[in-house]
Amino acid sequence: MDKEKTFDEAMKELETIVQKLEQGDVPLEEALDQFQEGIKLSRYCKGIVEDAEKTVTKMVNENGNEEILED
Image 1 (cartoon, rainbow, N blue to C red):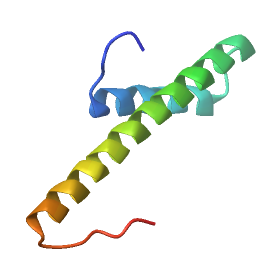
Image 2 (tube, rainbow, N blue to C red):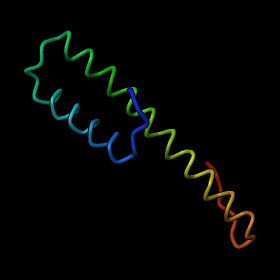
Image 3 (cartoon, helix red, strand yellow):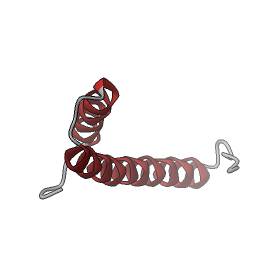
Image 4 (cartoon, rainbow, N blue to C red):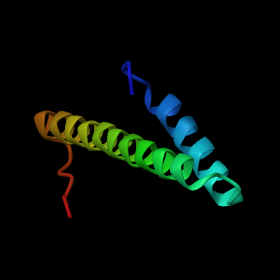
């Protein structure tokens, strides 16, 4: 990933990769490249979600309104 993508952009790319791989007519080398890119995008999206969860937890804790339990 060259530039910072939004969560939505990354998810759309990931969905495109999944659809392409599910079709099954992708040459092996390209499939491996696409799979690796999909893993990167998945980790990127997971990081965004985790950061958002931390931010929400911090905001709620600072306001003292409600405690969000972590798994």
